[in-house]
Image 1 (spheres, rainbow, N blue to C red):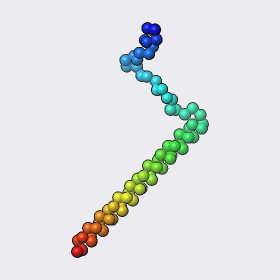
Image 2: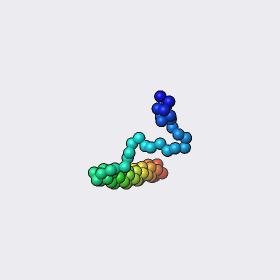
Image 3: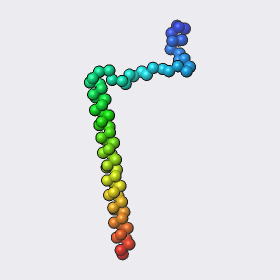
Length: 72
């Protein structure tokens, strides 16, 4: 019992191995990881473009409202 507790106890300063191995070990895993990384980059680019479009539309609306109020 004491031996089991010693094995379970964490040593100070020692790195614990990760419970999950996230490194792909086969061609399918490598291809899937590459595809998902590319998809994440594409989604980030799309998000940036949509944000820029929304800022442009919002700025246009604010300028239009300001010009209508200034024209009265």
